[in-house]
Amino acid sequence: MKKFTQRFLRDNKGVTAIEYGLIAGLVVLVIAGSVTLIGNNLNTVLGDVAALIVAPQAAPAA
Image (tube, one colour):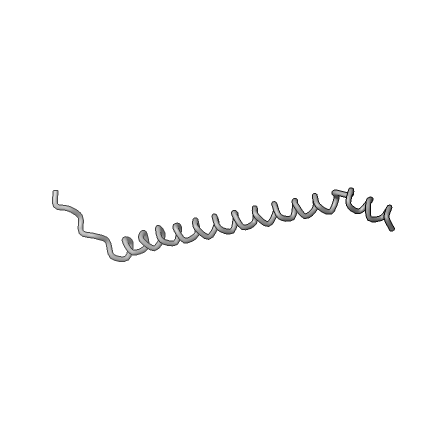
């Protein structure tokens, strides 16, 4: 049992897998946040363009 415990404490494979999993999770969160932010901004811009197409503003007198 003592040998098993010592070998288990020296084994780093599980720790590495957990670290990679955490890094992958953080990358997913950053990508999801970026896509959401870009999507909201793009929606606003396209909404403004659509409003200008539907009801164009009066052109200034030349």
